[in-house]
Image 1 (cartoon, rainbow, N blue to C red):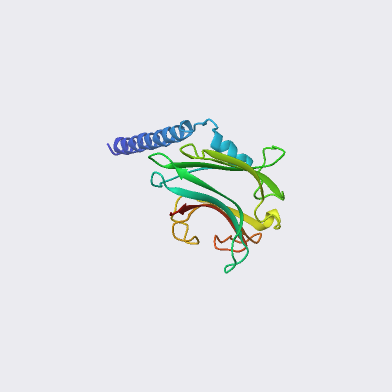
Image 2: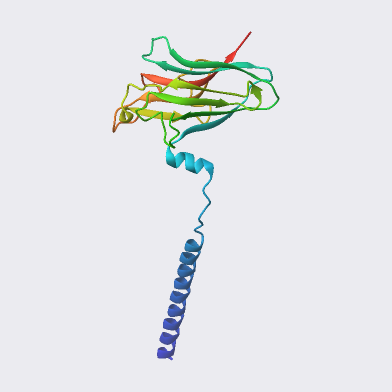
Length: 200
């Protein structure tokens, strides 16, 4: 009887061990099976190539006049140098959708804001506004800085815009930075692409 009891305990222990092993193996198989390859979309291509093409949405009242301004600021108390500004009017209900792009003039698919170029093809597309878009050539902001001395911030909300004046809506902020050190959105010199509401 004593040997039989011992055999029973060992048998149950072995079965329990196999059961735990089976569960572990099944979990590992499930983890492997959960891997999925996803298709590449336009946003992925823009991000991977460093193209300076951005799309934003913001809320403005119908018939609100506003300007999209591209400016540089050399130091905190200096007057901004406006590189480009253009007036628009929001002509429909709903949000304002704005697409901004800075492209190389030779049309190579490469970013321009962080590179050493001097000029860029600048486009704004606002489908529900008047006018619905513009295109021109502008000086590249902070062109005097080396590519390794610039950091670009892309704004995804209005929560990180304490550096702007009340009412301004920041889209892009380009700042001077030091290699190997964290960049500050409040650093100078700086450049900004923003929306400025116009009150009659």
